[in-house]
Length: 331
Image (cartoon, rainbow, N blue to C red; front, side, top):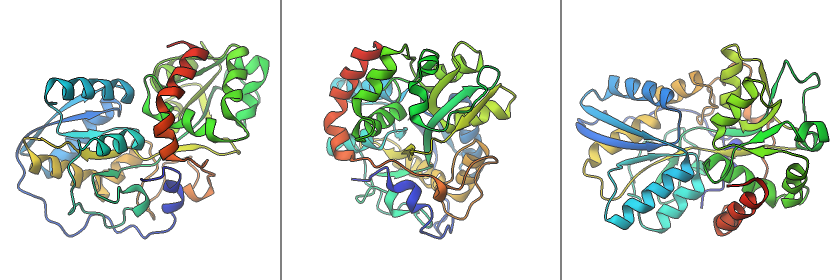
């Protein structure tokens, strides 16, 4: 089991060497990628991928990780899925798919410079970036920037707080699961937020829109959405809480039963390459390969405190966590 909490620490431990010496394969045909990454970013990913693999046509299906997993399970129940590759914000969901024997092991994946902590030991899925969750706030509405998760419990703050729901977002599954495992937070933290008027949207995008428009003053969100919005001129800023952040690695994997294994492997190869990492940084993500520059305005990964996560416990508790969250905030 890959523990998500190792991601930030591992980034400081290994030298980044980029893509291994494996030559580009003569891949061709079509692949379908199921992903939770924003559609406009995926269009850029496909365009860059096709510079190296021009003969592989990529079809994208994009939705929140939780909804995507429901779609996959329905397709499996019906007999098969059209998906060849998964790129989702939830290593726990990937682990469940692995345990269900749904993922294809890729023993020869090019892993030079990729930290072992973000790679499944059986090489069925591979982390592609580091994404943390913190606090976004509207700079026209907030005069004192939040510095801790406890700041969100103030009456006037919680009543203007929105967060993503684990019923929709894979990053929210990880974040809620991480927070409730911490003795200093637990479910009491979310109960306090709900009692004081905090609400849940769907995915991180709904949080970003509400805060950018001034419908809410504060939000819990993945960092790249807030940082990108600020860069584009939205009146928002982002805080990495001093108590620590949750982290995900957005793993990529190949589904067993793909009818274009070479094309799927080509996509995984590219996701693990330095070119893909450079694009990720340009899109606002922490790179997974050490030694690469982080996006402008981001802290060094080594300076972040990543909250510990027992991934096996999270997988066991995921359904109960979603039910509890829905009881508090609606579903």
